Each structure stands twice: as structure tokens, then as C-alpha cells.
Image (cartoon, rainbow, N blue to C red; front, side, top):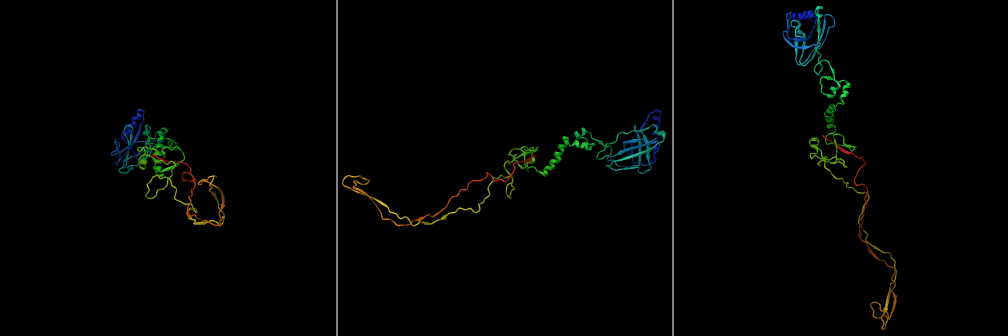
Length: 360
């Protein structure tokens, strides 16, 4: 790179030598004009941008090394470069009669490197001042700063970078936990378990953000999503109940009492029958005894219905032979009572749990 020291630059060098002090190159500028530099220049002809030196050194006697970061929206095709002292004096100019020296497009960042060679007399009193390297960001290249523990805990710094150790610390920060809860977990929960879906929970203590379904009221304002499911603000009681998929035309969420399905008992029946007439067996020959009372004219015992009785005797009837009797039984039925057996409800093998629903 060709370089012309200006008269102002030489004067600054002489003055610094006479005073026993040093002078500092602190900034480098880019310009648009191309020409042959002159010693009497005090500025660039068409300066576009001026930036502080971010890295600089003097590797050896007569040699200067600079690094400057040009970033931002500005763009240029530079044909002139100016080296400025800390008081704004143009120390040196480089321009090549129209040749493009550097190009930058909008929204890019480039780190320009400049290596200069000066005579021994010129270098004796010169220093290079680093005014602070630019911090690296999403859009700007620069020095990466490591975030401190305090910055991790505060969670507001946007110019520093996390190490693995600091990242692990960040997972314990309350703001990050809240962010993860609100932005990650709740978003996933809404897809995995929508508000209004009930889950079995084997504890009498509901997890945070959930409620056991036991017929209680909830805050319609604090839980707007749940309010869309139960606009009356009441969580239906699910204690002792289960879920059955509704059929077409049925109302979702409708409660129905348990019933036993209509059924019979195979091989069992009770009906009526007509037994008709039945005849007794042929037997039973027998006689009948008959009492006789004789009325008398004088005295005696008076049985009922008689004024006077003269005597009493008994005679048997003629013997009846064996005979039979016909009995009509007819049609009839029997009432059968089946004894109670089992529990109060139809159940299956199960474990007790609470039904919980998410509050949101």
C-alpha cells in the first residue's frame, strides 16, 4: 500500500519530537474520491465514514499494524483512506487515482487490516492507540464478552455471550424458568393436554395450575380458556364417575345415572299350567254310626230337643264299599322371588384416582 505523509502529519511528528512526547493515530477514514494525494492535504476529499482503531501494534521499527471494524447500514466503494491523529489532524493519505481500495455493502461488517511502513525518524515518536474494540453482536463482528453471573441472574444484557457453565446457571434463574413455562411448556401443554381435558391423578393434592374435579367454582377471569368449556364457572364433579364416549345426537358433558342393561337368565322360566281333574284311588269302605233316642212318658234324662227320653241306643248304617272321588285342580301359577346379590353399582376391577383439569 502506497502512503503519503501530509505536511500536517510531519509537523505533528516534529513537534512531538521537540517536546519529548508522542503522537497517536486513533482513527481511519474511508472516502469516495480517487486522486493523487498531496502533501498539503488536511482532509479527505469525499469522506464517507470514520472509525476508531480496534486493534493496533508496532511489530517492528518502522512498521505499524492496524485493524478497524466497519459495520452498520453504510456502504461504500472507497478510493481514499485517511489516517487521523487523536486531535483530528490528517497524518497520512492513501489514494490510487481511481482504483477501488475497499468495498462494503449495507448491513455487513468487515474488519479492515492496514500495515504501514515509515522511516525510523517518523516512527520514533508515534504510538498507536486502541480506543476499544467493538463488542460482537448478532450483526457486528468484534470481541465477544463473556456474561457475568450477575448479568445471567438479571437476564437483560444483550451484548455478552454465555459459556456452558453460565448456561447451566441460567436454567436456575427465575425469569428463565418463567419464560420456559409460559413460552415452551404451556405451548406444548396446550397441544399435549388441551384445557378441559381430564387426566387421572393418584393423589389428593392437585399439581400446580391444576384442579381436582369435585364440583367447585373457578375464576372465569383468571381461567378464560376453561371458561369456554364451562361458562357457568363450575367444574363438574367427577368423584365416583367415569367417562363414556357420547353417541351422535347426545349432549357432551351430560350426566347419566348408571343402569343395568336389559338381560335374561338362560334356561330359567316360570309359567302357568292346567292340571285338570284328578281321581282318588279306589278304597275306603266304611260304615257310619247313628244314635237313636226314645221318648218316654215318665221322667228320664232330657237331651236337647226332647221333652222326655225313655231310652238310647246306637246302630250302624250299611257298609259302603270301596269307591273313588274326582277332584278338580284346574289352572294355576307360582310366584318366584330371586334373592339380591352383588354390590350397589356395576363395576370393573379398578384403582381409585382423582380426575384433574388444567386451569388456564
